[in-house]
Image (cartoon, rainbow, N blue to C red; front, top):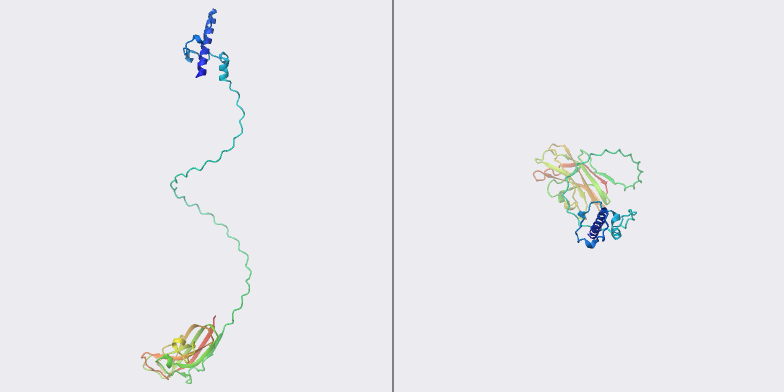
Length: 277
């Protein structure tokens, strides 16, 4: 280092001058740097602390300089722009599932709400139709309607009880009730008299089961003379136009014959229709 070399040269010269002064003799010529072989005197030949700052040449002092007191800290510089976002790191493995937390304390029951206001009155529905008509028959009376034919096709062998209602369009629950009376006794076969609901759905005269038939409650007639049996059934019908709804009587036998024809009476027949829509 250049400063170190100059320092070594100056130091060497100083030592020599001091040495001569110590003998009391005055040299004719002061030894200068030109008289010392280059690099002959090195820092190792000089004791630490032997050279003071005042012994240094002015130029060397200027090169070294004296460290002044630290200045006040300057204001903070502006924050630089944010750097670009680095690439996403590799996702680490999933951690173990956490334990379920303790159950919370149940909250206090809420207060009862204020009573609701009464709703507006509903619109009254249409008045229901309750139509009841009894057959002009007497219970246990020989003047009851006789079932003319038992067995055979119902479309041609039915007995019209002339018991019916003329109903306006709508939906109805229709109930059929009646009873049959045995005027003869044992017919030699099981006889099942029946009432059938007649809903006149077309303009064809008379009863046609395929178009007009509905429920047909029936029962086994007792084989003992002067005994009767009751039958009952209910159906829901919907009418698109004013319609006649009535009753007919018919029956079947276990022999598929005609036993009981003109020997069984209808001693009661009732049809009830209640409008529901």
